Length: 399
Ligand code: NIG
Ligand code: FE
Image (cartoon, rainbow, N blue to C red; front, top):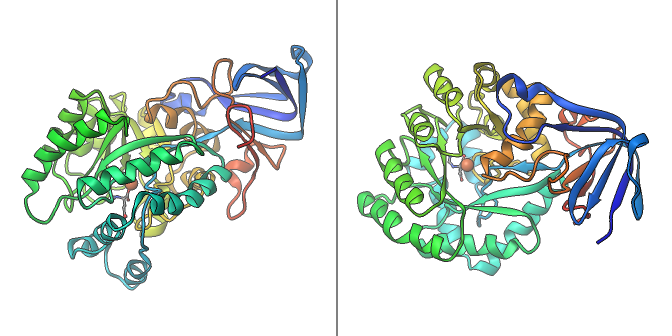
């Protein structure tokens, strides 16, 4: 593949490469009247158009703003069935946790997902992933977690593996809710059977656990993290969604890549995240859909934490099919500035997935970028209800 010089860039806006924490999240590089040289799918050079090197081809983007492709670091995009009855019940006042405790909610999605084969799961997930990509996500994490048994968990991960031929995906094994009976045997089998199988078959790069009153305890989480690390997998955690029961502190102490949700986090959890290398991932779609308090994004950044943002696309707590909208909601609901939100959805989201080579428009990074409709990049954080993203470029080409 030869070099292509992209021109017609009114603004080229990017965070610096690598994890950004605290005040550094606000510092973006902005080059007006810019050009971007792409070679074999990677950024070879970015700078003012007047200084651009020669290239075999040029591609004029027509005078718009260009930003890095977004990374969505938290989705449950593979599921079967629906949660429309739950939605109506919740709107009439039944809490999400009560529906789950009665065997509904996540457990009803597990029953439907466990009954679907890999072909059906692939067909259901494909349009959801296409929607996320059209919204600007050039890399998307997808979790398992709706398998009733281990075979169903593995089928979910095989569906993700199949979809990797069409999308840029990062697969995570999610240990979501314990069985109603025999939970200690279940945790032991997760550690001794499921995690080793997933590693043998190369089906996931990280293990996530839902640590919550209605799900796994801190001690169960510790055991699962121990097995994940022993098998060379990264760890991530769903924590502080409803109650701060100690999961955040555990994950920070054990060097997890990220702790996600944080709607119920207080001072102690904010301090733990700020003092650690663990990314705090905000999921503002959950705040909107469940009417939960917003995660303390502003306080986390002010304390010096590294914050990321994702959709948490799932049928129960966040039917949000736009990564751009997650970014825009983080500004409204969690108090981030537009610059912090861009950083949260790019380089920090990459770090939350253990990826180094994506998220910034600097030489050496994968050429994932978005051409907006507008000449001002801030439309990315401003626009609600229609997409400000005109074109998605992934590895230097339009997927
Ligand atoms: O990230 N809270 C736990 N898990 C998912 C919700 C899954 C569901 O409701 O189906 C979440 O919110
Ligand atoms: Fe989630």
